[in-house]
Length: 145
Image 1 (cartoon, rainbow, N blue to C red):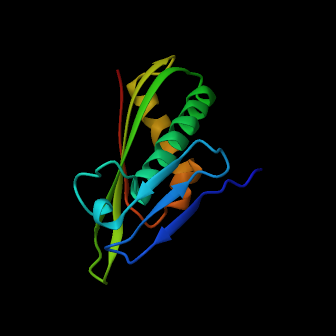
Image 2: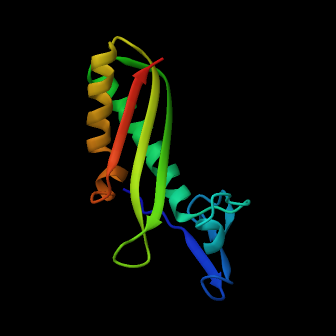
């Protein structure tokens, strides 16, 4: 299996500095990162580790759910997955990712609401990104459209 690589170039201090994260393996882009914008409500055109984790988690979960639905005898027609990753102050100091909320709405043939919910729970437990993020509370809201 492949290894994927991202690279970040950072200049300056945490609060005055900034950087660029490059998606090196795919070459699809380089994105600005900044701690003040990371900790602000408005990202102001920059990305953050939390947004990148959200992208990784939502895409991984969607892939895993499509596989689990097929294994359960269903056919995934369309899945809309959102991952909300929350950054909060850590009582021990600094910051921490305090939780991830996965929301999925699906159009699926061959599974009822209960079957879809079970498939979604299985996908949450078996998605490689979910496994990598153990220790962080991950919630799931799954429903058929």
